[in-house]
Image (cartoon, rainbow, N blue to C red; front, side, top):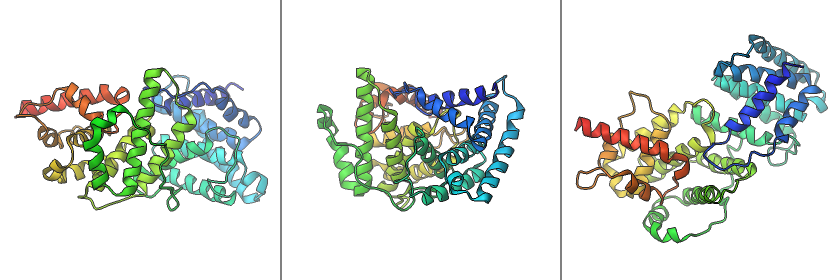
Length: 376
C-alpha cells in the first residue's frame, strides 16, 4: 500500500525530531516505528488517523510528495472513531489501537496549531485511560505511547498556560535522580547555598534533578555514551509536570526560578521540529525578570545569566528582543561586558548544558552586548 509509506516516513522523522540532536540519546531501536506502523494493517481507525498525521506533518514542511488527499483521512478517522464509541464494544473502545488513533489525531491538530482540538482529544484519551486504571496502571505494548501522550499534554499546558490534562493533582515530589557529587561542586557552593536558602524545598529538589540531568548529559557526551530514550522521557515527565503544577508570588525568587526552569526544560524536551510558540511562558518569564530587575542583585550572577539566556532560548520577537538588555548590562565588570569564556565558567554552576546550548547562547550574548554598546 504506497500511501502507508508516508506514515512510515512520518514516524521515522518524528522519532528523530523528538530528541535533541545535541544530546546523546539512544535512537537505535528501529523496531519501535515498525510497531506503530503494523497496527495500521488491522485497525481502520488508526490507519486513517496516522495518514491524517502524515498529511499534517508533510504539509508544514512543504514536502513535494505530499498529497492533499491525506487531509480526507482525518475526517474518515473521526467518523470511524465516533461509530466505534457509539457501538460501545469495550474491546474496541478502550483498546491500545483506539488510544493510538486518538493520539495521532491530537498530534495532527498540534502540528496544525489547533490547540482546542488537541485539548478535546487529550480529554477523550484521559477518559479512556482512566477507565483502564489510569496512567500509572495502564499496560501497553506500544513503545513510547504514554511518553508521547504526556509530551503532547505538557506542550499544550505550556502553550495555553493552563493546567495539564494528566497529572494535574497527583504528582510525586520525590527526587527522580540519585544525587551524585563531583569535584566541581566545591566551586558551586555559592550557588548551592543560595538555592537551599532561598527556594521552597520542592523547587530545590527539581533544581537538583535538573543538575543531575546536566551531569548525565555531559558524561554521555564526553564518554560517547548514550542516554536511554526511556530515561529521557521519564525525566521530561517528572521535571515538567512538577514545574507546571507549582506557582508562587510573581515577584519572588521562587517564581522566577520556577519559570526559568520551566523555560529551560521546555527548550530541551518540548521544542522540536518546527519551533513551537510558547509566548505565554516567554511573557511570564520576561515580565517577571523585568519587574525584578532592580532586586536581581540578590540573585547570584550565574543564575541571572542563566535566566537571561533561557528567556532568549524561547525565541522572543523583534519587538521583544531588547527588553532585558538592561539586565545583562547590569552584570558588567567595571562597565566592561564579560567575555563569553567568563560567562561559560559562571554558567557551569547552574543547570545550563553547554554542549547543547553554548552555540546559541554565545550568539545571543554577543548580539546583546553589541546592541547595548551601540545604543549606549
